[in-house]
Image (tube, one colour):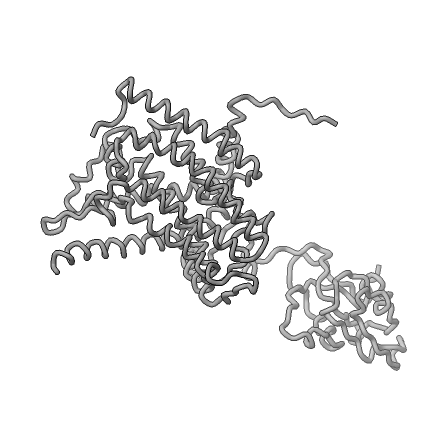
Length: 349
Length: 169
């Protein structure tokens, strides 16, 4: 009994804390999106609810609760009602394998700051789960019984299939370089070494572009494409179900940022800083703070890019995916493996 | 006509220079706090142009009576037929006066034809613009209401004063 509790209790606490941080992050990313877009267009942005509009996400959430949840007559109900969950849940589940800090030592026992410690295949798990999010888009678009929705869903499916290649191949070099699929090992491989965006610059660029397509963000937000296909896959959704799609999209953004930070920007590492020196508790807390600050920067980057670049045309999107990123990722793989095998580069753990 | 596409270098064809340039431009706008164009409307108001066409009102002459002589030119010119006049006789020098004068603001399109066509400058488009209501019947302005609106001073700066008796062009 006590042995079970010793495992479950820390895990439960970590899950609650992480969910709270991520969901608050989602809420405030939506506010940040509106604020940053306003500033970039010389506007002021929401400032009516609370100081500087800081309570705006709360008001938006309340609004979603009170809105009518409409199910169109032509929709296929079971799938239609389930689809929003299919985007939100995978986006949240991915956080179980992301190491967001070193460890906290309480009463002689050390608790690593990630929900599923010791997951050797963390990266594979994360990729497979985060790809599940597209099922929500496909199912939602298909079951709506609306032509614009199905167009959005098809666009989303082909887009994700095309760009998954770039993501996988560009991450493969990181995995080979650090010799492990475990995210913890990849972070440790960047401790005291140059972060991987320096050593794997080509792979980083490929991954950065592909992750924009994976998260359906501008300039690759064709599944939504307001000016062409109304709202895309979520045209028919309203109320809380739309909110779930919305949250799923932003949670996916946070996951993508976390992935970028973990794989290419040293995770919770800072150059020349050893978290073990800050004491048993503060080391862990500060490292987690650094990790989330880095995530915040990439969320800002996502927003920044969105309000700068226009949407690509669909053939351009496919051209970039198959004719540019895919060969580039292959070339990068070849280059990196050559460097490792014949010139002895790489991180030895 | 054959459009001559500009010859792009290899580096330009990767999109990167254009993307970085765009990112720099949007980033430069973030700290421009002083140059925000947002007008926080109910508290801050814009300055109206001099000839702003707001709600039509009836003007009162110096003798204290409405200037309208009930000629019905405005009623005839009104494109949406928002004006409705019932004429009556009076002992004043103008001999005719509007017994009833209603403007349905649900119909009015603020074209200003009534003001243009009026021979005695009795109707004027004032600078009031917050006219929405929850009840359509309250949008039908009666003569008394129109006169009362006409007596109110213009409440915003930048508005040319309506002409009164004596300063005719």
